[in-house]
Image 1 (cartoon, one colour):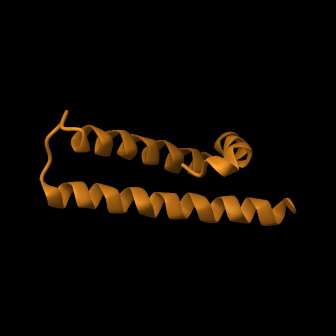
Image 2 (cartoon, rainbow, N blue to C red):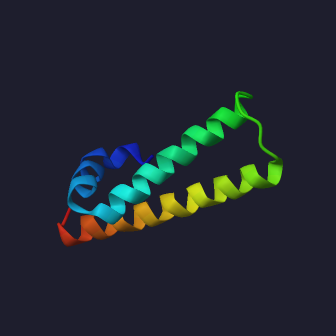
Length: 75
């Protein structure tokens, strides 16, 4: 997720518990979605879409936090 901000993500994960939680949940969802899409796990289409929307919401929230961090630190 957001690989171009790798350094900021590393700092935020250690400095901000909420960001760390968001990042961890995003990765959990990413793994779960991949398992379903690759056929190793079964899930109905509506449930899969729900997970994808949750993942996107978390990514948007994390991105907003990254941008705020950049702004605060003049990066």
